[in-house]
Image (tube, rainbow, N blue to C red; front, side, top):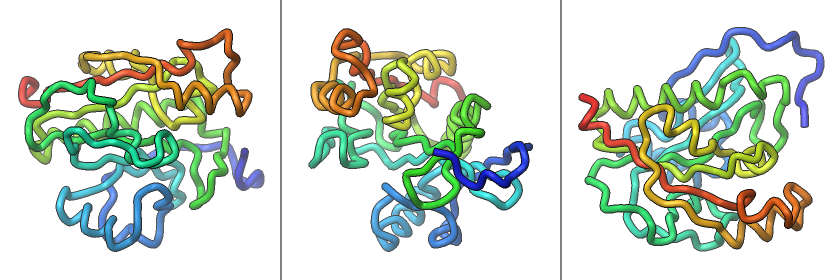
Length: 213
């Protein structure tokens, strides 16, 4: 869905890491309760890369410290799903960052998205800035759950496909069809049963930052 249709054509996009002072002034849906979010920012240094057009928030990429063996309490309907690799993630070093969801075209704290921000490379830009931030802050590695390559499913999940990660040096260490995702995309008309299992295939992608320093 589009937001303020009276806006002019989107212009230059600026990126920066989320700070504690942003809590309460930028969308924080899926990030947890304010106190929890503030603690995560204090511990990790940030919880998202934010995208702005002028002073308007237009996108974000959320991330958290990786917790080995994390399972989602509500399948795809809980943010922790992005850190749930169904036992397929390799052993990762302490200090690994887990990529969570992308919110491109997000102007407020709702599920609405302004489609004029789609297809402009903002998602990839958020990832690039996140990798720069992770490297600069001494993160050992970055792990991400890649979404299926089917664009409607990418939009539904708020993720990026394997190709985007591999272009940035990630290694795909596992791929599998997620039955909960398959059920959701078919029920919602986002994909057809004929497009399965590809439309529900996710992957674990890993980038070792220590090898790049």
